[in-house]
Length: 376
Ligand SMILES: Nc1ncnc2c1ncn2[C@@H]1O[C@H](COP(=O)(O)OP(=O)(O)O)[C@@H](O)[C@H]1O
Ligand SMILES: [Mg+2]
Image (cartoon, rainbow, N blue to C red; front, top):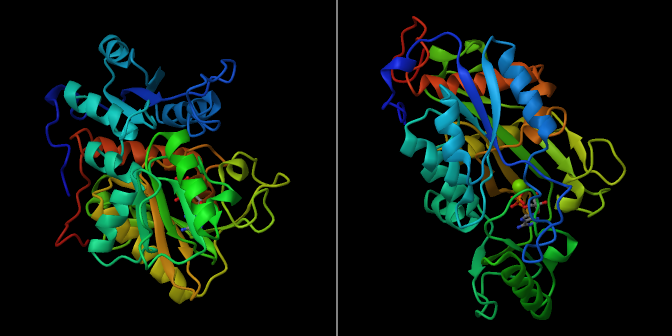
């Protein structure tokens, strides 16, 4: 997994200051939503303030930045701007692998970019495929079944209550307290609602009644060679952010980290309680971090990711999904809260994602340290 960006253009090598294009899909709340999309469509799109924060962070290190909307004009805008590298947080526009659209375009144009590549972003958006991969390598996931028509016979290992969600969305889209179904009738109704509204399969899982955590991972085996903060990384080259607990018990959607609860500001009435570091015993903490790292590695995620995990009725962790484009809104997004809890400044988090990405494209001079078997 070391150098997946080794097709670097020589002219970009070792320039100190870069022209960086931040690529994102921005919410345009002035425009009415078309009738054909679900009520919470575009919930995962970013606000322009987030882009401004990312740009400001990148500029603290002397780089020039601009914002490019990741829409159908992007190929032309890229030709015009000719960035040295793109800072990619684009969620993409429709289709079954929208988070892979921008990486695919950038690969075609041979423009370096940050974070995970096409294959990973395509698979990680699809929660069913992701869980099949994890299950194959013995990572713990709740029993699940994908419904594409809605009246498939329910497999016997799936016992009520069950949880029904869109297979390929994010940011709690299609998720509220009605996602918990207690009987056959509720299951069929909810599965059909998801299939029809979101125009995609419904993923049906055993309901996980326990506590909920999210675990951020940053780095890769050779991260210390390129990082401005080699001290952040453990011997294996990865940084585990402190575990964040999402306590939704007093949120607008009790016990479900829904789109409605995510839309609230931290600390606002109806928002979940964000507890970081989570108050958990060291054994559980170790397990959660181990699973998050394995989840990241098994999907070939690059540089940064966040994995959502809940405890089942016996208190055992079960992986729900991985976010390979984790939100980066300061003082709001889970990963930013995790970084802040251990004293990592927002600017440093953003610059770290930049330099880890850039180093895969040969744009950063490696530090002069010995690496043997991935260990310093
Ligand atoms: N099997 C499940 N059991 C209980 N709650 C679930 C389950 N799957 C998802 N949830 C709840 O729904 C939320 C959103 O689901 P998740 O799979 O993380 O999708 P996304 O964050 O991409 O919308 C979770 O944070 C959790 O609160
Ligand atoms: Mg999630």
